[in-house]
Length: 123
Length: 105
Image (cartoon, rainbow over all chains, first blue to last red; front, side, top):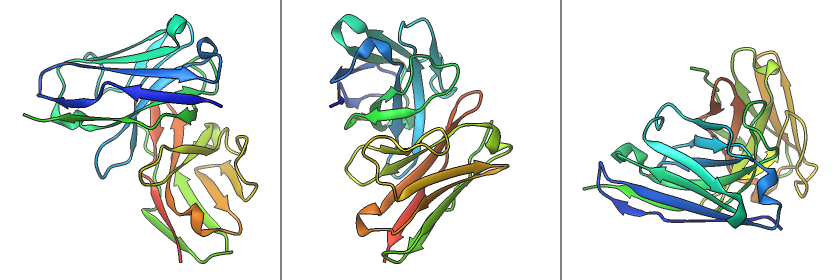
């Protein structure tokens, strides 16, 4: 059974940094693209970033481009999101999601999701 | 930017058919996925590539996509189907619809 578990959320001040992690199990981690998707309080789902199976390709939403960095360590079945210069608008539950394929250029679909980790940006 | 439009809410009686629409320019040329999201739980993919059901998703969930509209259809709707439903596509970036709250009453 596929299991994704996020960690690293918490309270952070505007302008500071935070690193989220996600560990996957129950599947061959390095065969699949991985993503971060967030949901702000009372709002809908918003895709944040994705990374291909080899880390060759990374993609970002315009709202986080230049501030967030996605990465992965396939040897540890782990996905990361480095969040720099955070803004109050970044307050949300952050979900780690597994794609159905290995790339992020053709199509993107979120087959499995973690439980999420809450990031609150406030002074 | 590319927009996907969903009705904010849909109501259905138990046992009846619920239809949730998702509209966008030339949407039929893109692959659509649908996700169910219940409060306090993580989202679940119920349809991908317009019409395919992931393993474990009941047959009462089906999807279609043509021209400018994709539709998620739930036949014989049950109380446990209540929740928020989101459509999603890939344009120059990943796009989600605004979500539809399905109420079974």
